[in-house]
Length: 113
Image 1: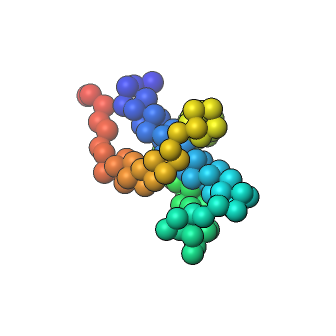
Image 2: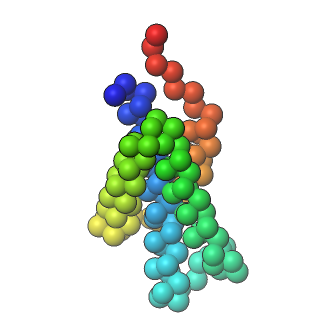
């Protein structure tokens, strides 16, 4: 696997992890009845954004081939679990997921000829 493929897979893992963190945090907050802050009047938005990021990561990784589509799922869930539940970090940092997704679209990864 070329190093550009590894960079692409690492980027898709982080995008999927951001989406999974947003989705799980949304259900955790609603379960406990906490306020969602600015999303309080539309509690479904973090879930929709998280799901969209997860689907985007899978489709983007599948551009390398369908066997690579499993990497962001497994890696993303592992990173998300460590970030949200083990280290109990600031979940709102997962809002960087859309920025990473936009970056991955405009990032042109070329392999040397």
